[in-house]
Image 1 (cartoon, rainbow, N blue to C red):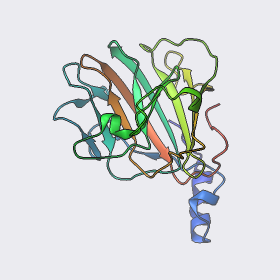
Image 2: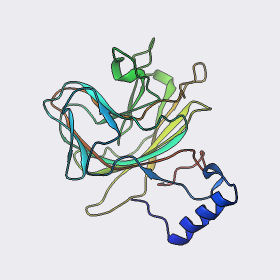
Image 3: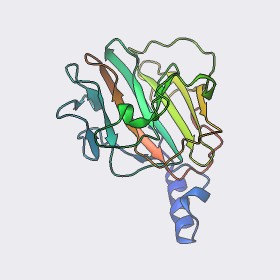
Length: 229
């Protein structure tokens, strides 16, 4: 995980005392949203659809199509960094951003879907439910093995409706890697950056995906730059 030296932490505390907001701080304030032990703070679509296994959020193989979302905060502009891999399954791992919680639940929470680490995408918003066409820009990169751990960073600006993702394969035993941008979403006609939960999706029954080391920065100190590239 991205740990800051103690002097940077101290500087941040002093900035708060002086009246500087986190958004004005030079160093990203990355807050864990998963403790590696429990699913406290997370809501799933069905009981036991997700469990904690080996320090990761693990989707159960027999669970139906659905999702788990972080329920302690909703995000409009954010930096979301996490590690992931697929244990088994017939569809790429998927995460959901700017999603709408509804009863009954909308397909994919009515969200924008990113498929880390290789940059697939889908637009689940009401009236869309399609591949998004020119709303998504996919950047060339090697095709990484989803069965191996990768690191991804999603940088989303709710004011502009732009969300970008950078990823990289983690070398064996490495805590981080140098990412490259793989995907960008932008809808100029219908800005998608509503305040909403962050979620992980089980796309089909039979999929086992794992996510760990999930941290979020919001507000974002520098909304124009990745910190993992």
